Amino acid sequence: MKSLNRATLEDVARMAGVSKMAASVVLNGARSGTRVSDATRARINAAAVELDYRVNPIARSLRTKQTDIIGFYSGNHSLEDRSPYLSEILLGIRSATDESDKDLLMFGVFDGKSEAEVFRALSDGRVDGLVIHAAPDDPVVKLLAGSKFPVVAHTDALGTIPSVVIDDEEGGRMQARLLHEFGHRRVLVRTSKHPFISVKRRTMAFLTEAENLGIETKVGRKTTHGQDHALDADELALFSKSRSDRYSAIACWDDGCAYVQIPQLIESGLKVPDDVAIVGYNGVDPYYPLAWDVTSIDCQWDQVARTAVKVLLDRIQGKEVPLETRLPVRLRRGGTV
Image (tube, rainbow, N blue to C red; front, side, top):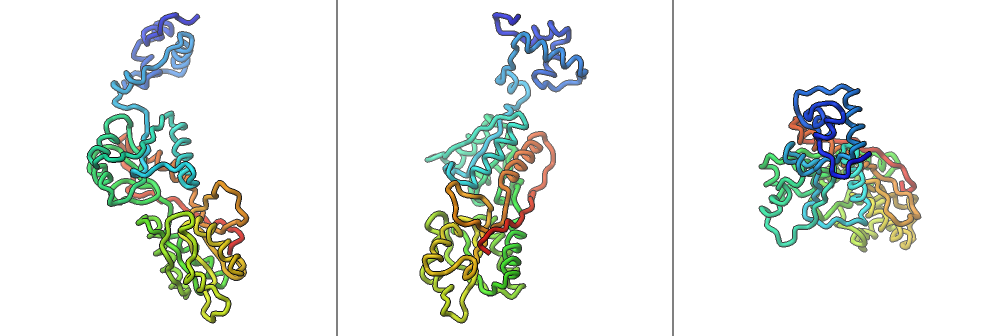
């Protein structure tokens, strides 16, 4: 029968016939030299259930100096739920925190706040550590890197903070080797307007590998998202069938480029991939139905996020972690090459 009053740790210890310290070790994760057998642990848990004992998270955090909460900060950018990439990242973070019995606190945009104010909000003790995505020159990154607060970055290596990334260089080389294998010798290359380290790495690796393979390249407009990915008139002219030096393929920094450019090419009387091949990057499908299965570099962003949480938990526990952890990429063959 459950007590009408809120059960205390002493009540649980008394019912289980153990010391208060033993009960605290089992129920509160208290650190001590007290060793608890499996049988005793089961008895304590049974008593806690019988008495409806509930851990006081505030009291526990004051005692252990930890909140069991992981923070997520996206570099003062809005959390766009419609972004397939961000959805994969958040799915991985949520799964990893759930499996580790941690809660997740997502920080929003700090409009009008100074770098020092943002830093204090992120590291004021509400969370035990932080998973972030930000630019290397972000002033908040500099403050975090100079502190002892546990932080791990994902997707883009920051250089000053442990980062979990994918092997962007190998992904760029994969793109070049695939197009060369299919006989393409002139390729338009699309990269990003944003100074992402990941995109710089994949683009430079593609250009270097293409040069080694004898592929002529032209770097086109730098783009962001949506219709900004569209080919302009000069770029479309590169694929004209009347040209003796016509280009026959496009290497994109993001799959969004391919999704926008394919209908453009078709409307211009060009067939994909017969006349123009396209290889994307990221391997994340959009929410809307697609008429094309884009060949891409699959980055498995959910695994990147899960690994970032694992590395962060190691940092919180005081373990040494590498400055950069790289996860492999793989070629996802579709119908555009």
